[in-house]
Image (tube, rainbow, N blue to C red; front, side):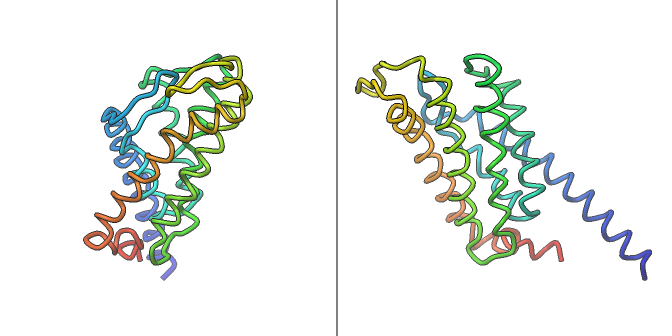
Length: 191
């Protein structure tokens, strides 16, 4: 009996690793579909959804790791708009990692929606902190037709201008796929 349980755990671990690789790669491909791009970094893409899907299937620990790996790939392959190493850490490695918090809603009915909001809010907070602490050097500045002299307000508006649409896009994708993929969203195929 314990031999069967051991095999089952190894099989699930291998499946988790394979799904992580596929969904992180899919997120990277989706990151090149830029529906909107801002001048100082930040864009609207469907890239967050595969990471959120992975997290709600495999839990928050695995989700945080997948988000971190995706952030690393973004740093390497997406042209890294950054103001030094601190910006690279915050805007890439730290910012994409909280998408894995969606895994706190693993197995919950409608958990993908609450997880999307939580994961995106976590990413927004990291970008906001980066904007207030690192990008404050850009203030006063003119962006989106407005002039900003307050770093906090600048960061709120700038990062909100792409994170809110990204959150809405991820929720729309989840809404369109929820019924046909419900058993996958609820990880019922992993039991």
